[in-house]
Every structure is written in structure tokens, then in C-alpha cells.
Length: 104
Image (cartoon, rainbow, N blue to C red; front, side, top):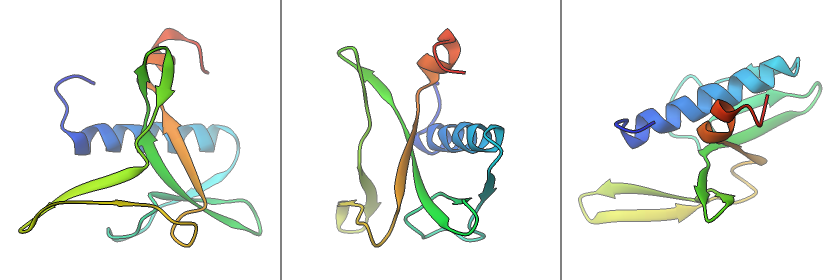
């Protein structure tokens, strides 16, 4: 994923996670507009699961994900974390594991 912007990396991770959920036979829903804290909704019939998608990175032999967001505003960078009122689950995608065949 070298050469991609952070937004492109996030979009690739989100697409890979959505594909994996579909391969499990579940239905994936996407918000029609930006601005929510979750990226996808998984229909568990009858429950809905709000999922935040993250790109996992190999750090010292383990997979790591950042559970904070950062965005640039006129006042500088603003960081925030997620709460249980905003998301129900976090899903992580590792391109290294996908390409090595360790995860199907």
C-alpha cells in the first residue's frame, strides 16, 4: 500500500473488510453520507452492528491499530477516540497477512 494516501489506505481496508463480511454470508450496509463514526453496518438479523474499519500494521511482530482519529482543522490537528455510543465493533485489515496467505 506504499504510495497511497491515508484516505486511500482506509478505503482499501474498508473494502477488504466488507468483502470478508460478505464472504461470511452476511449483509453489509454503507451509510449514504459521511460524518458518522462507523464505516459499515453489518446486518446480523435482527440486530445491526456498527463497525469502524481500521488498517492494521505489523509492529514488532504483532498487529497494531490506532483507535483514535486525527483530522486537520483551522485550529490545528484534532484527535478523538470512539465510544460505545458511536460504534459497536472494530474490524482490522492487514494487507501483509492477506498477501502472504495467512488469512483467507
